[in-house]
Image 1 (tube, rainbow, N blue to C red):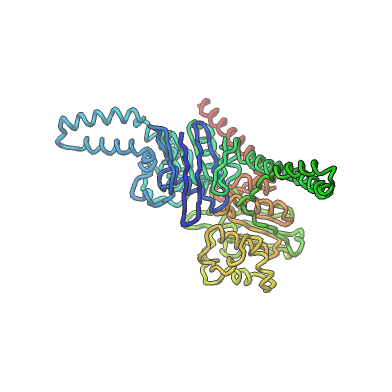
Image 2 (image 1 turned 90 degrees about the vertical axis):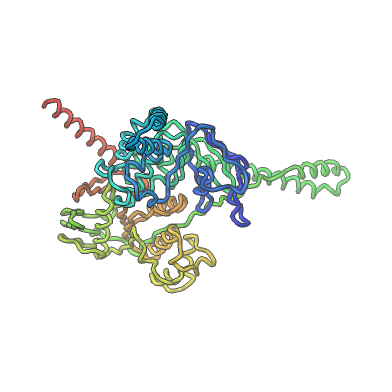
Length: 544
């Protein structure tokens, strides 16, 4: 168990947390949620001991081991991948290194023998003999191939490092597991594996995530940060949302009834306070009126942007035709004679583990990259708006936000442009911020403003939910559901894909799998196909 007792954290004059008292118990997975800036990651750092609170205490059951997901992707560059995972249990790793050092001595003494014996006993107690195989199992489950296990961390790419650090956090069955955005940069297969791992994990988990589907799958409790307090709700994310909305609704209804009673009493007092025969009753009503207190209903600190894509013209029947597109990058064929036709009602999710293939396809369709072979043709009634995965070049300038957006607006009126910025929560002085200093989430909201102001009838998104908070993801999700045009997109957010797409495309070894279906149905059919393939292989092996 881990608990916070009267924890307060002040940053300058602002209290990020104030007198927080909460217990996280064994056998539960807690989803820590709250608006951007509410302090989710900060609270995890306080729990893990990386940050000291201004006052109050963090209490961990004696003897329990706490593990957390490291955020510094370069911290272990000098170490081997398998060793990095085993460092998740630092005591076990230290024992392994000390043992190796003792056994490597040429002048092995009696004292060394005694020390080695003690270490071997502790090593066995910590399941040291299974450490390498356990670490390899975690890595393989997250999609890190066996040939990478003996490489240096410095040799891995960014997404591979994230997976190794996640395996490190999970290693050795920690008693308390803290995960800050564990699904970031994971492919959908790795996310599904992590979901199953956490569902079957019997100890305490506290997780911060913007992935609603993930929180619904793994969480048994929701810890909601709002107004410097943390409130616990039983159930998953959807249950929290319904419960919190119901609570506000009930309080508003109770207040409405109280207000009606107040009005009734006030009218009686006003009518009869001067009437001698009714003066006693009027006095009684005054006392009753003084006792009525309205419930304080604080508006949530959460803010939802208003995302509404309105195409300027209706799209025609001819949308996009792609024929035999081929592209090789660094000797690898990422697109191998890809062909497909897009219809006017298509909302297509491109899924699968090959991120480069999907990004390359989008860049070709937007004219940012030339194919080696093949052609593509947009319909004459189409107009496209594009959300790139890498937006660095978009913001590499000295423009302020309002001027940056004005350059893309068909109407150059400042009030018109600021209206779009206001919908995306850029209010007041935010409009004069320079775009180069914006946070990741602010840059995404700027790009969404650019896409809205374009009036395009085809939207192309390459991982738009990265860097967005839950409220912005929900707003974008709702905006795309009601969008009447065509959408081509990639996302690791399961719920986002399931509720938006009506057609699924997956690029496997450069080839295209194309199915008109929902994402859940696609996963189910894909899983059944895999099971049939495994069954066939097993049957063939038995016959041999």
